[in-house]
View 1 (spheres, rainbow, N blue to C red):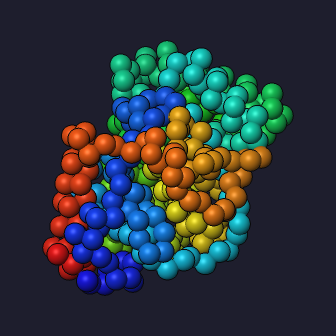
View 2 (tube, rainbow, N blue to C red):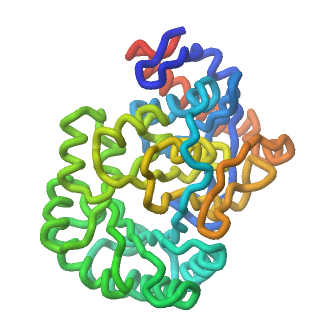
Length: 359
């Protein structure tokens, strides 16, 4: 066994990781990132349970960060608690008007005053002006009307996420239209893939920019990356699980010197509780965080899904429910069961090559 420089804990061998793993598949209420379910592995360690569920398009190096976070949850030390509840934004995934209205109404009724709306859908609509006009502008108008009706005119906040779909020129044309439809934007998350393009959009539109993929998908989180993100961002999105765990995220937050939003990664309540614990350990957290994704689950691995109440998510003890786990376990004869064990092996092998996991 070796000690991870990121986690500061002894990491188990690959064989021990595989022996601790339980494959799961949990359905979603609506399609998200092109899938209608969340799959992954629970890793059962001496201190708890971690969730290893990198999306299929993550390479082994990216999946290795998810593994570090899962190991931290199951084998690592508890985090300090600076707060016991966190403001939460609702997430409104891409969809038709009816889906948008249903999700936004449910979220507002639950007290969420901040809505994060996915725009620039890759599913049948491109990032161009005509698509935004036909699809996203009506959706944002509906969300604004729901927030105004529930909380008073202008009292709710709308943030949008383009997932790096636009060129700088597209974003500069499109964002004023979306801001008008939304009655003002708190920020736009990752409008362009390139950080320099994001900085240009920030300078020319006056719309606040939040950076997600520009940080999360970087090959490393060294000073050069942190400086480039700081130049492009008004706000930084940090995702503890795909970024390698709580300790790495807290270090970056201290270095980056920008307001941060802590977000989940479409986790079950097991993974989401780890993200919530991280958010509760970050000093000075002021913005609503992306921890409301439990509402998108049609099943869970716990008896009760972590859901916001009155716009906040409270820290709580979360445990795997045996009956729920049985209902959502991937059978050994299912090809995805062996696929996930191989994915775990590949991620652990990548870490082992860096001297962080025993072979």
